[in-house]
Image (cartoon, rainbow, N blue to C red; front, side, top):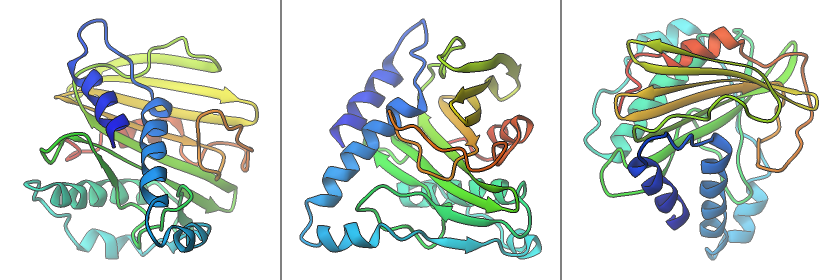
Length: 246
């Protein structure tokens, strides 16, 4: 995970102006590192075949989800992952149609977890919070397939600045939780709503698009529904979800 460590070390020590770390940049480093790790095991070939399968989950009844409180512990990385995964999963599920199907998006060689919202934590240090927490899920409903992604990492620098290639709109908003940057981007047939919250010593970024194919740097995605799975307003709500601090 040296690429992740180097990238996050630069991020958390960056002075002004903010570094403006993008999801594509940091996830590309994490995925490349995990690919090498996964493919060096003795069972790499078998795992690569298994990774072609997707974990499909039908949403449970919202009452069943709400009846079970999320964990509160954060003293170990495993406990922190469990807590954040529960909070993220519950927040996203609340915004989706009751009959939506959730599919975990994986890289080759990666076996999807039983819970599609179980966060990946790519280490960048020894402390529980010193990691790149992220996941991507495919959501299929009556309108087609799209995706929802989340990226969380420690540090005080800002997210991607306005003025990106393919930008349709971009604005900033100061909130009690920190600075929100809200962007809509277009690349071919794919539209992405992205919101970044920078504040309280961490960066939280959610985005949603209208393609159920795993987003990867340099890969052109196909549009698989008219609009992103979540609206810009819904993605904003996710970024402001309580208890995402770490």
